[in-house]
Length: 123
Ligand SMILES: Nc1ncnc2c1ncn2[C@@H]1O[C@H](COP(=O)(O)OP(=O)(O)OP(=O)(O)O)[C@@H](O)[C@H]1O
Ligand SMILES: [Mg+2]
Image 1 (cartoon, rainbow, N blue to C red):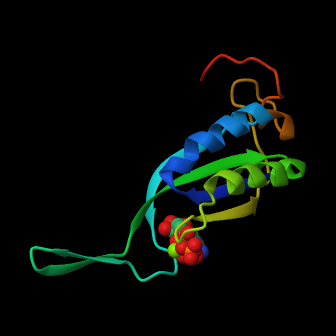
Image 2: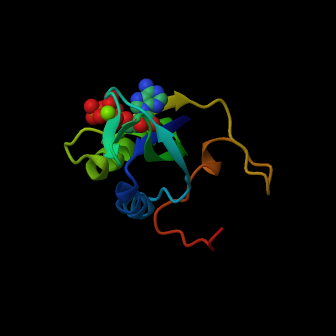
C-alpha cells in the first residue's frame, strides 16, 4: 500500500477528482495548505512598500492505494495538474503499513478504494 501525496493548484483538483472517480478511486482527502517551492517568493508593491510573499496557496491531495495502482493515480494527477508553468506542484509516494475500515474492522488493500461501477452512498 502507498500514500500518494500531491501538492497541486486549486483548479487542478476537480478534473483530477472526476478522473479518479471514473477510474474507481473515490476515496481521498484534501486540505488547503500554503507552501514554497524553489522560487524565491513573489514580490509585490503595495502603496510604495515592497512585500515579498514566500508562501503560495496549494491543495494537498492524499490518496492511499494498493501498490499496483500507484502509477494509474499518479498519471491522472500529472495529466491534469501540469500546465507547464512554474508552481504546478509536486507528487510524493510514501509507504503505508496498514489500513483499517473502522466500521467493519476489515484491514488491508480491500479497504482502500471502491471498484469501478460499484455505487456507494456518499460519505
Ligand atoms: N520538497 C518538498 N517538500 C514538501 N512540500 C513541497 C516540496 N516541494 C514542493 N512542495 C510543495 O509543493 C508546492 C508547489 O511546489 P512547486 O511546484 O513550486 O515546486 P518547484 O520545485 O518550485 O517546481 P517549479 O519550478 O515547477 O515551481 C509548494 O508550494 C509546496 O507546498
Ligand atoms: Mg516552484
